[in-house]
Amino acid sequence: MENLLKSESQTVEWKREWTDRALEDLAAFANTSGGVLLIGVQDDGKVIGVQANDSEIQRIANIIVDRLGITPSIDILFLEGRAVICITVKPSSYLVSYRGRYLKRVGTTNRDFTQEEIFQHILKRSGRTWDTLPSEFDLKELDEEGLVYFVNLAKQRLPYIDMSHPEIILENLGLLNERKLTNAAVLLFSRNPQKIYPLSQVRMGVFRENNILDSHIFQGTLWRQLDNVIKRFREILKVRFEIKADDVSVKGLQRIEIWEYPLEALREIVINALIHRDYTYPADIQIRLYDNRLEVWNPGELLSPLTPEDLYVVHNSIPRNPLIAQIFYFAGMVERWGTGTIRVVQLCKEQGLPKPLFENWQGGLLVTLNKDLYSTDQLYKIGLNERQIKAVLYVKENGSITNQIYREINNVSDETARLDLKFLVSIGLFTIRGKGKKTIYVLR
Image 1: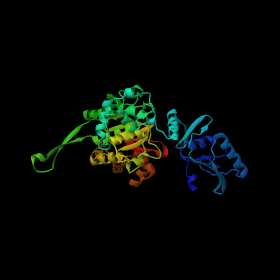
Image 2: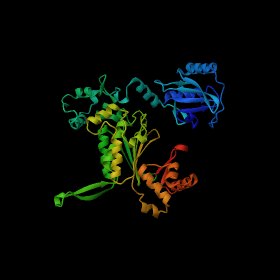
Image 3: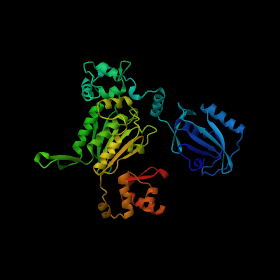
Image 4: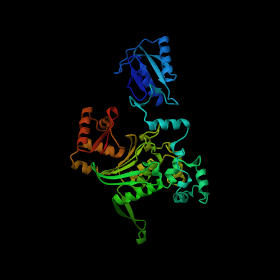
């Protein structure tokens, strides 16, 4: 119970006394991950207590049931010697409305659901996903050339697939719904997916600081987008060559391409973006290439309970678009075990690059690959002290650093850590992500 007084959070809220404003917090808890509301605790965490008896608990319970339609668990706790009313709500299977608004809990605040989020919630409740819904396209819009492309890729995992019956293939794969192409089939096998989903595309730009030097948009099916994006990477990324000798003969000499970012890692990142993006979100996949980093952003944050930290280790695969994911699996382009991001991390490590950074950012998932511009010798040349160099090397290895971690690895005070980190930001080595206790520092 002491943790309830540690701080307000995603699942904990304090109120000095009961007012109807508390209903907003309870609705947001019910629409997110559940939570606990303490009545009798000030905003600063000081316990002041409240009148707590059976009649008061019954009165509050009746208000919650009547106004929100949910049944809470209400208990009386004694914290620091004072009575506090503890109201616990569980995640709801349906959206709970408060005065006509649908709210979710984000950190310590309540935010309105967007129309897209409401749509996704309804789909989830019905047990369906967006990619399985029927579109306005029928079989006349089928691009048989794209289907042939898939069939040739899928023969190893679907050895009996037969291109002589395209409609049967689509039916067996769940790509037809009410005689219409599903949304997945539109994106994968229609002649012009952008006719009804104009933002189902990839936009790539080359930047120098904030100035754009080059821009391309890739449309067509997901297969075509993937192929053209990788082709463009080969055109704009730098490459060097190394000679490897498997044996002492001339035949044993091999010329190996070393791209500034591993192409296999980039391919994995783009495939994940195409499969897992939220196609109801009004934005396209965006790739930005800077002098010192490459960023890939796709609409739609990770689905709960996955977090960005989970992507560095073995984790469950939770696809937003399971039908699209299954087709890519049959094509031999992905596995089903959530190992893709681990492979990206390993490929960067093998090439001596910093660990990729995965983060939920501005409504989507941002993947950042950094160049190794931060060798110890170079950092000494630009005037960093040993503490600051240690911090930069830590971020290279781990993706980010906090004030607390800076203090721990350097054994310094909070003020010294704050000033050092401020300096690293001011000279353009670090940039700040998040606010307050969630502030992290990453390589710019």
